[in-house]
Amino acid sequence: MPEGPAVHGDAATRRAAEPRSRRRGDGTAGVIAAVSAGGAIGAMARHALTLAFPASPGAFPWTLFAVNVGGCLLIGVLMAALGEGRGARPLLRPFLGTGVLGGFTTFSAFVHDVHLLLDAGRPGIAAGYLAATLAAGLAAVALAVRVTRPALRRGRAAG
Image (cartoon, rainbow, N blue to C red; front, side, top):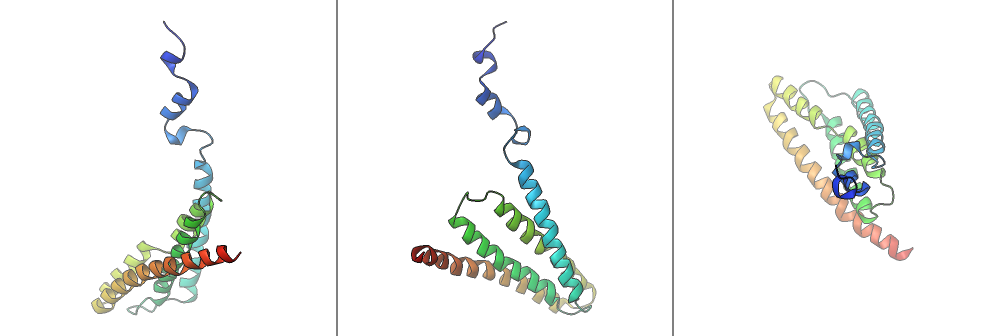
């Protein structure tokens, strides 16, 4: 039976054919650890705020609204800041973005609060909360990116 690169391929070809999850040194474990650690930090921070400032049953959930909109603002800043300096710290984006801010902001608790408001017979507040959170979150990301990018460029030009 023939042997050699023509049959088995060279090392680079074999490595490229392996699934990413089986390759050594591709940083997957580091990314998983960064996202996990960041997610724990973000989720604990959100939980602490909702314990410190609980929403009254049937009332607008201001704490979670502020957490989600504030988190969207920070995600916009992070997107702009890390988008300008790609590759400098490969674990920073997964740690802060997906991890900390992903754990801090929460779509599931947001939807749960809408459901609780509907169950409490407050459809107007539920609809307002739903619309306000989505609109304010999107506006916060857009505003943060719009303000952060020029500020970073001015800072680099001056420094």
